[in-house]
Amino acid sequence: MDFDLGADHLLLRDTVRSFAEAEIAPVAPGLDEREEFSTDLTARMGELGMFGIVVPEEYGGQGMDYLAYVIATEELARVDGSQAATVTAGNSLGIGPIYYYGTEEQRHRLLPELCRGEGLWAFGLTEPGAGSDSRASATKAAATDTGWVLDGSKIFITNASSPISRGVTVQAVTGGAEGRPELTCFLVESGTAGYSATTMHGKLMWRGSDTAELSFTGVAVGPEAILGELGSGSRQMLETLDNGRLGIAAMGLGAAQGAYEAALAYAKERSQFGKPIGSFQGVAFPLADMAMKIDHARTYLYRAAWLKDQGRPFRTEAAMAKLYCTELASEATDAAIQIHGGYGLMKDSAVERFYRDQRILRIGEGTSEIQRIVISRSLGL
Image (cartoon, rainbow, N blue to C red):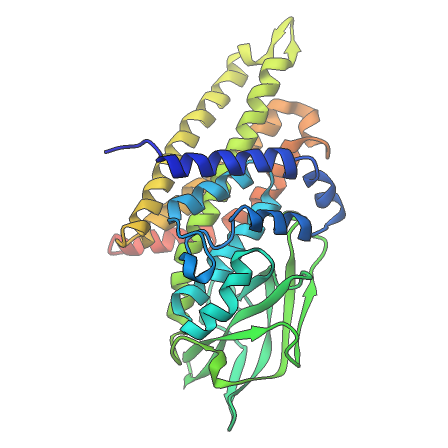
């Protein structure tokens, strides 16, 4: 086994890290405080090729692998969860379904702009009454002589209401018996009559990313708006979540890494009782635990991404990586604040933002409890 990254992956890591430290780090606190989405940063991340990383060049992507996507996401999250969220949702949830399930016409029409970061596409699954139970969608699509009419709502949808949002992939009920709905995905473009996206404010985390509540009132679309085959919506959504869990795991790993680095630097600089606080075991041991667990998390996550790239089953491994990395992010950011003491609770401390941003990671793309269900089912339970 070769655990060394190749030249392309090393170059990508260094490029994204340099960009995140030079361009994102100085403005992230202000964007967070103002709850402001940055079209400028999104455009620059697009110029660097951070969108469409795994999409072939013929559709405007970079033609790289999922390991590259994980590395890029990790490096962004090491500095700022909001920008990492924009990229992660833009790739796995926005671009991914169109690339994997779309027609050639849909791919060529939509993907190039999305891969350039000039537009964003959203993933409309969660509803007020349908969270972990993804098949409980109340949004309905009724067949007409010319296509379909959608009615319903979605909530907590990333990248749906910014000035560059181009549309959303929507799961809707198209038929089926009671208790066994037929679910189909539709591509609904921004500006379609009856479709609206309202930005949600007052978030604990990812305050520099775009989160929206969506409404569909008599939204008429043609048959060409169907993504894939009629009735394949649930499978598409669940497979998309498998891919997305690699990105959320990378965000957890990046947040843990960023918090660990901040805590390590502070432990070396801060003195009490006449010596650096890092010389005391009460501080040194948590840092040692963080270093060990981060290394283990990275090794396992990269393996899960490798399985995906090899075309091998990876659903269980993605769930394990997502569960471990996101719970590690919670542990590491909490420890980082404890090491910082009162200073870690202040808004001008990076670990304060890491602590808030990581909290969603145990919820998005399936809660920690859902990951344990996925894992336990793989055990035959």
